[in-house]
Image (cartoon, rainbow, N blue to C red):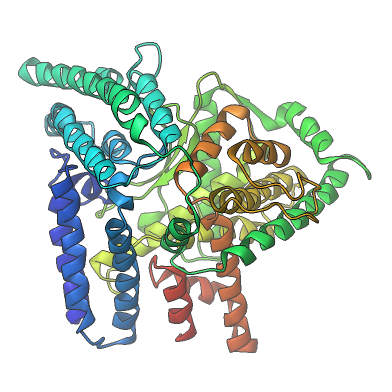
Length: 556
């Protein structure tokens, strides 16, 4: 490897001590007993590392085409991270899914739990939880002093999450974690002390959000065009025309809903509505599973079957990636997500389901496509294959480079691909995929519309409040009208969009750019185009912003 790869590898070595929880997330060993510095100086140290690395990178010339891709990827990712920090976005960010609090809470989900060393690491982190939150509190107050604060409504929603996580009759997260571990003597005492301290600190942080920070939060949740453009570019790794993308969202949703009506007719009879087809599918005992554990086992079986079917046919799946775990998340925030394997693959890639409280019945027709999204050929294949390719990618590319547009766009593209490959021939499963696609298209409209406070087109294909300007209330009404998602989940989704501008559209817009990249490759290669080779070449580039991806693919 050349100078650029050497610099990238040094970056990881310098990054891990600054981000011990991040090190656990990507599976770098040696930091599992630390939580890191969430104070202003901790955020500044990370920014300085990015600034210094970009300066070094700027004067290095790539020795190979692979290094050129690595340089472009690193400049794009670190440059946007630094731009967000300099704009006051990083240190002030707190919302229902992304914050310093969520980072240090979620890290416990990925920690080893067997053996005295593993339990000791968990106890150490639990006992550091209060100090970490104190530093984070200072960061949020300092950001507010500098004129940067998240929306007040997001702070209140996160405070509610603190209540649920610490409620003995709710998630009771920290005490529940301690209850699941085996420890004796002094270690057991440290574990219990840490659980109690982390519980108290989280409850106090919730009160801080309500009483001290929320009064200083932004009244309006809309980000505005300038903040949104930066956020969109960060999540996509590409700069798009927001107004064109907004208009495309309406066209795409109308197209998908027309296709859904056609599938509904196949499920029942000509003229049947989508809602009638959904009701019939939900009433089908063969498509219903009772109990969270039974549903987890169903996901596991389907994920394993997909890997077995795809390996050696449409993909050559590395041996390390042929293992996946499906798990129930220890909190009830709602939603499904994926976490990658550790660097040495001792911890496998995992698909998690955070089941909302009170939900105990599941419709499989809705979730077949979700398993393909989170498992193979979606996130699990994409992330795992990247980590395997040490002969092609430097350590930063394998572990730290992540663009939501690339990752979520690929996963959504994977759902469509599985339909193309014949895995969604069952009309119920096909309707589930289309419903998920329509859900992602709807949030392109709502996310851009609400944050830019755009006018709803007077000629929009749904006759929805023509000429009015988007508000959170209209966003809720539109999502409920176009998405078959339980209100408990949908409320979380809308809060997520309002607090995390630009992220939700990265799925559908990312898929759009992936499809454009495939079409461009077909046009370049003509009769020599091979779909399996395209996928291999694209994934072997690692995760990178979508603009650098298109440039790199054009050179292949």
